[in-house]
Image (cartoon, rainbow, N blue to C red; front, side):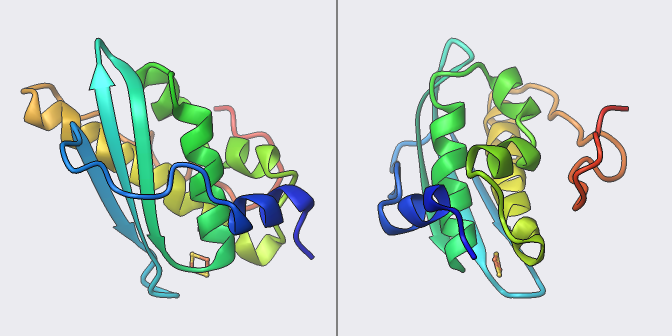
Length: 143
Ligand code: FES
């Protein structure tokens, strides 16, 4: 039921671990399943120079965090902020519908880590665009 990409990232997660001197840390949890994800960012001149994750959760959450860290490494904060869970799911060549919410954790964790960095540096935290940016269906999510 999982794509090869998902299995690959689940079995061999990229960027797993912790950055002890991270510039931004985001921790999110899904209250329904109880799974937890932490994202650590190293940031230099607005660019994500390193990223690691710790996920205490299901296989889809691990694969999503692994793929998400790959997607945002080397990107600007804005680019990373704009990466939706949909992009993660696409890069994973799909997740079963019941597992799409797991990829939302990665998006939320990255947002939290970015805002953690912004707040620590005296910047306005960015706002989640109102409502649901992470739809569960395939429909385009452009406003
Ligand atoms: Fe909890 Fe996947 S079931 S994150």
